[in-house]
Length: 253
Image: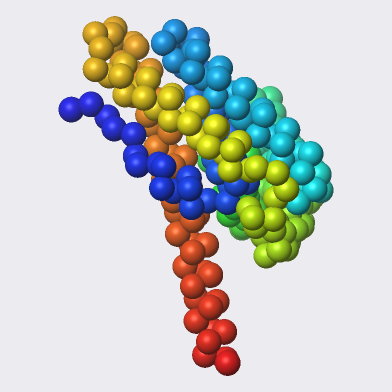
């Protein structure tokens, strides 16, 4: 039985404009390694990339769009720091001068490598992942001190908290309906471009392809499903939190 792409249209519609675009960006990045191997998907993926760029341009120019310059800067700062942490641990592992030193570096590398793709995730997912990374590092003070990443971990913790505070503040006040211009038009176009990718991918599994092409096609389905599944989890958590807050307000009233 061929792999199937998870149902995605409903969850994309339920997400805010910014969340929708963030999920599609993550999918676009994850699909790129397979584009060169599958000629059939290259044209639709190219169009998908163009539509994402158009949507990004619309959001950047829109003063009421969610992705304000400050949010982008804070997200970039924490992305840089988490990459620095991983790179520094990798360096100590690669250039360890004793077996004991290498083993300690390996223990730390095992932790940080789990979060190497955190920057590709949707904003809320990345925040949760980085919080987990910091918590794990804080439980290994002997190693973080030995490999001189205690300061980086503390900086990452602060950057993540700063981002989350700004993100939550904006989420409380900015809604799709407040975005100037026809956001729906751009959102529909980029979602349609993604839908075309899914159609081509499904079609490839029904065609006579090589074993490698089938493997690559199934890998694309896996990365799409991973992002859709994560987006669904994030949405359900947020919806549950909102419902709980409304219930508390009613009780307090």
